[in-house]
Amino acid sequence: MKIEFASQAPKNCKQAIEELLFFNPSQHKVREGIVKALEKFGHPRVVETESGLSVRVGSEEAQTLFAFDPKRRAKDPVGIVVFLRTAPTDISIMHVAVSPDYALRGSETGVGLGVELIEKVKGIAARIVGVKQIVFFYRQQVVIRVG
Image: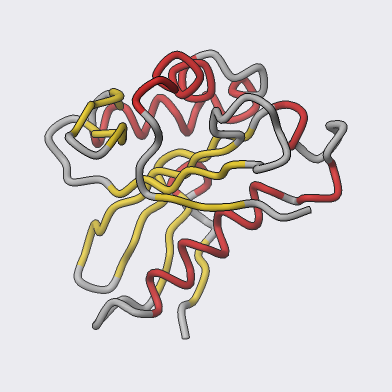
């Protein structure tokens, strides 16, 4: 399966993005991490720019990566990862959300979309001077070395 990635989503996808971020049926599994992320960074919100939609977190300059499945009729994102630079050497992933169909036990289970989103962030981090690791904020003991 070919998944496409973009830093912006079409403006007509706002409801789908909000459902992924705020009403994801799997979020109970990482509830404690979500609460910690909200306390530290603030609440995420979908914002509209001239070129499309992205996610902003509190007053932080967060980066967003959306995953799209081109074979789907609806052009809504099927996954999203929100990350930011929290230290000169660190990128923190503060939120990952995947549509239930693309989760490990979903109908599109072969995709491994959550892992693929994290790998995309790792690739981005490797191109940023000084970044040495990715911290998965939901589970702070999980650190991915870059490079």
